[in-house]
Image (cartoon, rainbow, N blue to C red; front, side, top):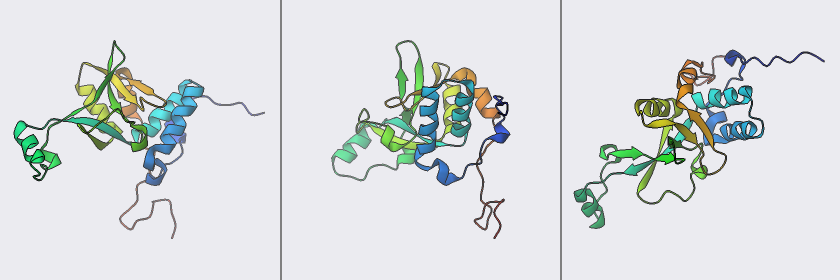
Length: 178
């Protein structure tokens, strides 16, 4: 039997296409694998996938009294780009984490009408969490198979190369032959 190499090499990670990441199923599979076998290799597989993923972030909508009256009177809701929103923060009693979800189906019923779900690149979420010193990290899929990323891992995630295959202007991936 060949000797198994347990050294993580991000360049050996499989290339990912946008459709591989769509819906978050691959990410959920990797987090379940980590939950079953909490090895460094499985952790690195998850964060390597997260690095290229988009996640859903619940945000508390902060409407002014005037905006609320406008909506209650049957008026047109304001343009969402002009509404201040606060990303949701979950706490374990000691630490606070930015809440993100791998897919809309993972969000659960905990978020009511006062929240808007925003799709963001995970790297943007890392920057947001890093800019807030009261956050200990990011919590993915808090209501199913939770995966916590402590702040100390943000530099590692930023250094990981992308495994996402970008399409060129003609709509084909660089490795594809026509």
